[in-house]
Image (cartoon, rainbow, N blue to C red; front, side):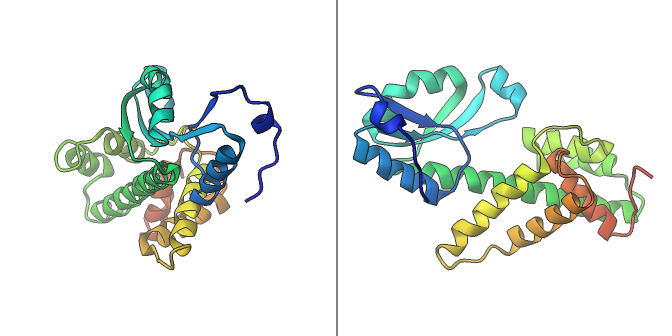
Length: 223
């Protein structure tokens, strides 16, 4: 990874760069090295939360970096989020935690898509099934949000499917760097690519569930 910028040379003394982006561990490691060489603080602090959550300053933030730098920027993080989870001095830990969290969301969407397709084959609507499970064993905001999109067949612009695929690919690359395989992630990535091929790349990533419906022979609910 090569980063070419005058920002390091021109940074004010005591400056701390806070990165909120979802980027690869390799890039975060390189950024950390460059910041250290330039005497500039660096904190990786990617966030979990949709735009409405961000507007309410209720994001969940995972932060890692030099403890003194994290402490210095904590008031900023407090202004942005509801809670900050400190993950130690290595910024890579924050990066991989964010990637893994997003991977879990994509797999939850895939699971809801496949499970609701199965129930529909036996006459139980996606609305009835997902309404039940997202109020009981999977009663969490993310399941309820994306389960609602799937149940209603509405995938208004949100977190684009193309961006979701980018994050899954980051997870696969991170695993490959350690010689590991992520079988579920491979399935999700394949189905995301199929959705993009069907022209759905700009739709919310929960449209991934439509691929499960098509594979089950249920057809496209838009028809």
